[in-house]
Amino acid sequence: KMEASKGLGKKRQQYKYGDRLIYEWDQNMDEVFIYIKPPEFILPKNKELLRKQLQPGEKMPELDIKFKSIRLTVGIKGNPPFLDEELGGKVNTEDSLWYFEDDEVVISLQKVYKAQ
Image (cartoon, rainbow, N blue to C red; front, side, top):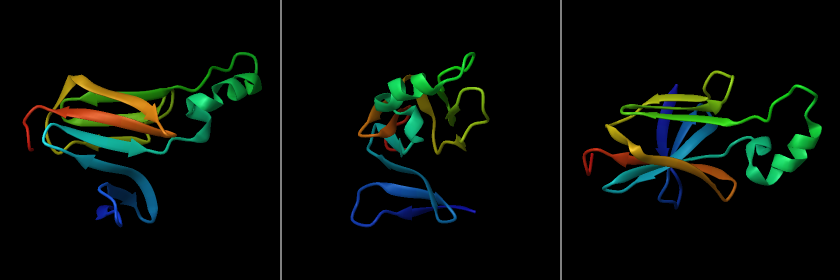
């Protein structure tokens, strides 16, 4: 069962499945931020090492992050999504984005309606 719980001493909220941390999140009036610890092999700093280990015909794994107005999916291309969530409000998909920061994937979802 999925449940949200407050992070201790942090602004971020934790979203867990049982005892497993799925992601952390926080928000302000304009946007929601989702923080995910991806597998080590997907981090940009490990890209060259992974490239050297690929077998002929194997492709580099890539993140597949899709924003829809009320849904977010996150996964590795060619695999079922790791995260497939309905959002709590509409987001502006044109202004939403994702990036790597401090070995995390940070997803910034721009709210259509402020303070929702």
